[in-house]
Image (spheres, rainbow, N blue to C red):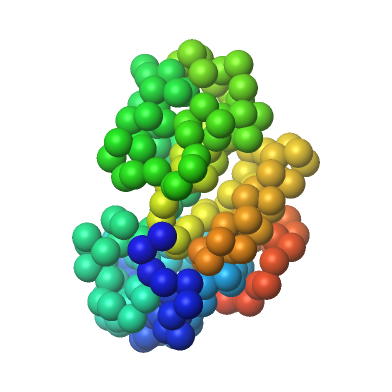
Length: 214
């Protein structure tokens, strides 16, 4: 992982972060930090800006104002690409590649967590035997599990997880919790959005509540 788990600096720090859409405020100003080994649970109703916040942190949207630092450095695009793994609502897989080809392709782009192999990651998320299945042939739950395998293989220390329990059964929910716990033990950190339908992962967790801006 790029940032040092022994650093006294927070892995992620946001100061005065705001975002508007069509001249209407979505969130902010927000100030928060996330340390290595910690999870930040982002809660709020639909439309409160949870997904938008994660997309801003990932660099997919531009904030109207504020600063974002990763391990004490300004979050330039090159730093975000190394430090952040983003799990969104869409599977972000190539439909006509099979499960193993998708993971090999993404590891080639973004690197791979030490001592982890794509085939082993498929087995860990319950997709053993689906190595040759095309991504477009997988069910919604299987696509989410394939995305979780991609997340697990990423060497990025900061996970941005947008409703990671969606489309998963109880076994899948427990899988997400185990993955988050292991990632934090390894010195990583996670931001997890939820609208309150699922319990928080069983790790050191703080809360960031988003509400509609007046």
